[in-house]
Image (cartoon, rainbow, N blue to C red; front, top):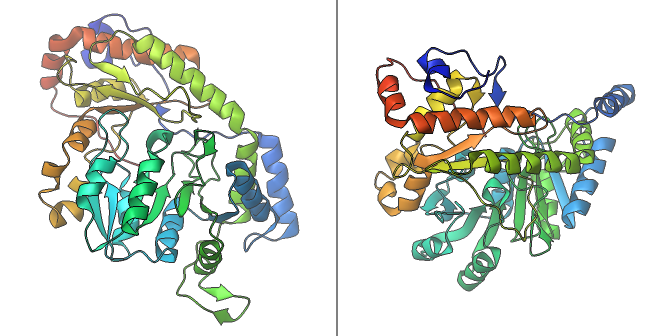
Length: 410
């Protein structure tokens, strides 16, 4: 149903624009026939895990694509991040952005390492090197930066900072597979980088993650740590866990890799359509990607500026959810306002003005291979009508006794 007037919206008595929910991060599938061939081969071989054929091939393909010596694939990105932190010998305090998925901080806190929250650039949403510089102390052992929305961090400044202070530099690259800056693929920066291949990522392995690095010793230790600390059959050298990727996940990962360029092309088309249809709406702006980089466009990020937009971001989200457009307010309310961090650092928000502002305005919109151009146009119509209705819509929504329930997954 087209939305041109306030009374067309569900919150004003209209019918939903979409019969089925449009989700952020709905999985891309790739070639189903090829996937099923691989899964059947796994079953025929009866080699379901423990460095099988498809796992080894997946690691080789990923390392080759990002131009690193090593790829150590694991069951999920969080486990990969935890093992990278452990293998790097991080302890004490590690500086990390507060505007990220909570798993970034949890990977440190879980191991008794204190995450120290840095502020972000208000335009790119990436960690701000100037903020990091102010937070370095005698207890700091590393920097954990995040390539948010697939945008490469200011790696030269971060590498200079780490070198000057003798710190380890680790990148959470969960959003950034397939992205590059200055001709260098994300994956080869710092001491190591960690990818996520979760189902919501444009390249996915159902569940999965990986450490990529050029450090031979780090890769060797990580491989032991993800397999209970074993070297061979009965020799344990490290305290480890079971973080191995299984063959079904690796088969899905390979199938997804083969469709990667198609997925990127579709995502970029969707990004350009959102830019076109949202253009000129007061207070609503799309995140701009640098023209010189390579991006996967997996995250379609709009910013709703409260000083310019006549409807608040959260109320716009209520309108969209009522229309079955399941937009998201990543990474609300900021890690520093989640437990246990809000109790441990009750004054953190004072030091993070840009993070606070970004958390209040970000709106992530649906994309992926299931989104047709006409779907995007209808989503943007809902936003345009909502903003044009402004105060009238806000007064209508204030009479509503309930709000749309929202959860958060990466």
